[in-house]
Image (cartoon, rainbow, N blue to C red; front, top):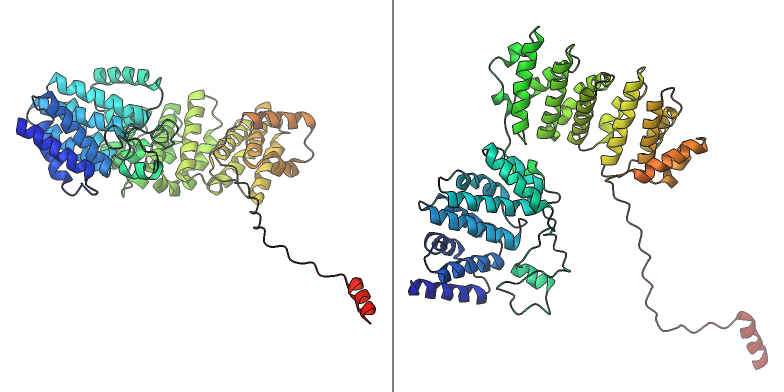
Length: 482
């Protein structure tokens, strides 16, 4: 035991002082996981964790975490629990920015399924620590847990969500060199902390984290029931409903989908069911299309043109559950196109000029939500055509259409600025302009304001040049000399 601890201290000294100590990193981490993390002596356990921290600081925590995760397969429960606890401490110290999350989240299922209570308890603590950094993005990875355990975790997550965002506790060497070149703390290795004023991005690492990026793609055609194609075309609405419910449940479990040869056929069949005579079947088909668009993303885009017209037509339904499903699916379609206004423009104008006022209002709502989601401002040509259509909606005979058009113009004004929009809505009366202004004040858009042009730097002042004499003066001097 004394030799083991002495060896640990020697390796710690080497890692602290060597300029490139990671060449034997895998062997060191493997030895720590196998022999030290679950050691009897507290000093050995403490030094082994510190060595893991120093190896992480020297380069990046990703390979260190990957090596410790291999300890999840250890035979002794205490060794598994120690490995899970070590990963949690590494996440707490460095956050998730430098860690490969997909393999870690997959490996988390092993300690959760362990027969030992201590291991499962450590797995819960690790999940809570990951939630601090990832937020709701961790949830899809936990959906296969027992419902009781999942509910318990959700309660812990809710409590953690009220806490301040986490911050990276220890800096990598690269961060220390880049961010604290002159006055770095003396303890730059052990326990070096990120200063409160430093914006290293770790505190909000999970703010924009997308569960789709962490999920493995699923081929939904392999989840179809054996009688899917038969029942989807059945004359009995209950049989159509049954296979769609099965498909919907499978899609809800799959965060990310992959395009396979049969996926397009499934999408086209669902598109036909949007207009189903049975409202339950139609709603299920619309909800399935939303999940397909959200799970496939860009590969779904080619099917937008063939299925969106049926959605526009179906928006005349007044039942709120159907309206909500149509709105969510239309928004998923727009995201699948990469938030490209050109991809939905024709369908907007079709809806905006429809004979049914409900369809016209929903078209304006769809455009307004799309304008709020675009990453870049539209050009003047697009501004004009959308503004013209929305402007005509202000005089619609239906109050709902007028309100939706005003809200759309308010969002367009927020997106492109009132100065740019005003020439396109000349002639609108004062009351309607005020309403547009109210909606503009409330609107939120994703597109960033164009950066202001910087004033040119003043030219360095040089030695003043001697002024040339005035021509008259020169002539006078010449006359005098004469």
